[in-house]
Length: 221
Image (cartoon, rainbow, N blue to C red):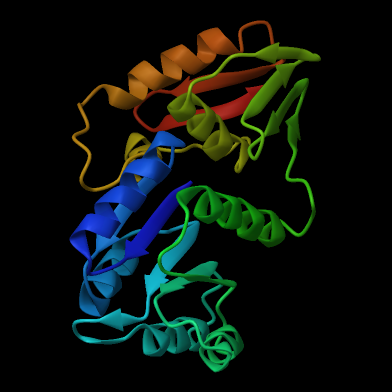
């Protein structure tokens, strides 16, 4: 998953990024609302983590604009404001969840998982293609019932491919989903991860096809 963290506290932002990146997510960091708008203009995110008190305005105004534009990206608000009225107002504006600072990182991770499950419209988000089954919340992949051991980035790459089976995805599109702007990415990074993923799902009816000059797509048969 690719997250956008909108937070002006550098120490907290660094801690949140490091924790979520350990889970295999790509996390971009915006220090204020203007920076957040710049990120959203060029990238698509699976989840937004939003502080309320920011240098150039109130995060609730951002949330209101976000929903008014019919954007459905889930938003979890992170704030030191703990009054019930603050929580109610923020949820009414369109927040999907609300977490009061200081918070436990394990709880943040659990709330991210819960919001993403709800976004999928079900208690489970199992994805199945041919004889391959992927459980993104459990970080588990099976091929014809056999569990395969995938690392975090391989799991995320498979998730992206499963989201659009048969569709050609370019290297740039895959990089956009797998890496944050702050991460150094080599020219052959996608080729390396594609090769690793192919080895991990070897024997499956699902396969990753290279479309020369265009990119990659997940096919079966």
